[in-house]
Length: 480
Image (cartoon, rainbow, N blue to C red; front, side):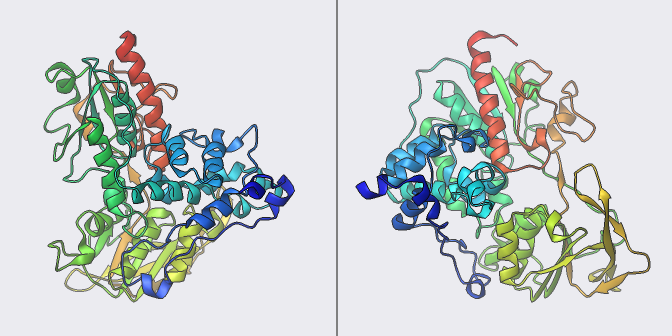
């Protein structure tokens, strides 16, 4: 160990990134088990030794929840895994989740000096894999340590939605001694972590463990409670006696392409498809009682992580051909590089620079083909990506039995619709101050996808931390 500690920066830079062992592609498409196995201690400590322990630590500033990354990595080098996980959990209550689904390559790892020195983001210290290792180590020890909770303040906070933002707010507000109740519309808490992200990327037992840890802290969880139906926001504040409300209802309204044939049988939104497969465990039918169409040829429209999740789920449900139809090129594809790689390994066929123009059905109203048109890239649009332009007279058809539309989601409209004085933008997102996540309505805060639009887990958590700090200050001072 002494030799490890005395490695020079030059010697650390010579250590290559440690790959994470994972299931064979041919085997994993027949199950829903997690694809990567995770690091063992030897791999984790070797990878951790690559960290240069930079004094300015640009990785911390690039992390939406500002984990002290060099500190937790140093603990791993020293074999102090309890200290490593405790350091992470100072600012991130969901390390096992973030270590699996956070896009570290676009955030902390992009700024890593090791990656920059080796002139490749792929060569950066594998921060996400090390975070997962620390979290997995803790799970193997049994129950997690419960954070300290200050004495009761007599203040009550309602959290609407138990997704990443809501879970984060619950932890940080409860730590200050406030009474916290989370209202979840579905029968299982976790939001998109439960219904949206497949088991093979994020095992549900991990999410439920994190929720159980919050309950051990004293957070109350109300399942099957739809705010906007059971109570309005005004009723929570005025009739139910809550001193503050955090709205984290997400972006659960699926968007469609508005092309002919989208109302045919066999056309799914990615929300419905993944919810049936994940939350309702349709992959176990008939052991579970939630059926899903078992088809041979599937077209998925979109190029993000949700599209990849849908395509990979279709393979696991028995599809022989899965075509991922995306109107731009691979370079512009917003999905994580790792997810695209896994999808291709498993047999997903990328149909790039193509766009659906209509869905074709049979005489019984079921999908039997999709018509697409070839595209070429023009000048950059508002997103900074080159705009796809249709190529005249280039239409063709693909024979399919089902189509999954995964082009994005709009904000959940229920709370804004039942709270008319709550300000929203033209897309229906709640308007909240970036520094505090306060809305225009006294005592009401909002964060996550209901504010951001469809974003990432870690960005939602970042807004949750910001909101929690502002809620705690508001409950202390009563100043708005």
